[in-house]
Length: 98
Image (tube, rainbow, N blue to C red; front, side):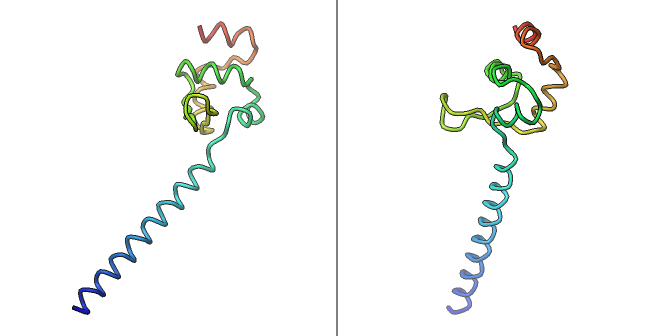
């Protein structure tokens, strides 16, 4: 009986450790996300252009808090988007997205 209880305790300990490590990894992944204002500051691309590209599905983003929440994206997704759509002026951006 004691051996079985010890086995259960060790098993639960391992499971809890695995869950904690998983949550820690998830938190590290969340740090990598930027909102569109941060993308504008880092890459020099207008927020309205990024927002429209996200709505059209050209820029991979997630929305936190539902349809009205902010767009969040990864730097690697922004870089791949800018390779496909390199224009940065207002006139060219909206012509390119249509």
